[in-house]
Amino acid sequence: MKLASYADGSRDGHLVVVSRDLSQAHYATGIATRLQQVLDDWGFIAPQLEDLAVQLNHGKLRHAFPFDPDKCVAPLPRASGWAVVARGGSVRRDAGLFAGPHQPLRAPARPEAALAAIAGDLAAASDTASALDALRLLTLAVDWRLDDELIATQAAPLAVTPDELGEAWRTGRVQARLHVLHNGAKQPVQDIDAQPGAALARVARLRALRAGQVVGTALDLPDLPDLPLAAGDSLHLDLKTADGASLFGAIDLDIAPDAP
Image (tube, rainbow, N blue to C red):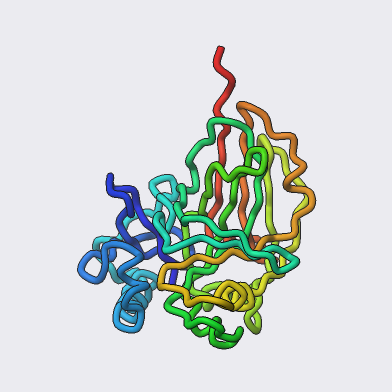
């Protein structure tokens, strides 16, 4: 299933289920109003959302409406924590506050993209297989750093269960392609191969993870940090399948222009 959180004036947004083709959505009211509720009681609530998703995909919900990613905040705006596992295995931790996919920045910053795994409860010292069992949802996230200081983390509009990734999900690996537009100009497409289960296990090596923890696998994208971002620029990031289908929806960043 595909889930998103619509802005409603609250800190967490309102949970919606999104159709497989991203054309329709339906509020999850009556089942859950925010994603953290689902993660806290996954075994009971997730099957109900799956049923709602099936009905939505078959056009059987009378109150469905067109999905609009511009109305989305991050799927899980206030996570239990945010940790990124670098290629060499080092772990960087943060509080876990996620901005929405279209929130502007006030100054140019360096982007660091990651495949983000949203976890259920996971015991300390769990192995990769156990970590995959605790994997609930995946999305795309980008840390924005200015002089090595984290100034914001953005998340794509959709958080999806691994089964929704189709051929992009194979034996616990996500294999996809990151498409980037800089001021509307296409940048080289970059292949990614990430193992979210291994990243979850790495972060849980010394301590248990609580439902709602988000763990990113840093994407080794040598061209991305070198983009000459400046005031007034825009950047569009979208992780897609080999045939061009968007996995999580796009992150669109606008950097505020210089004051006159």
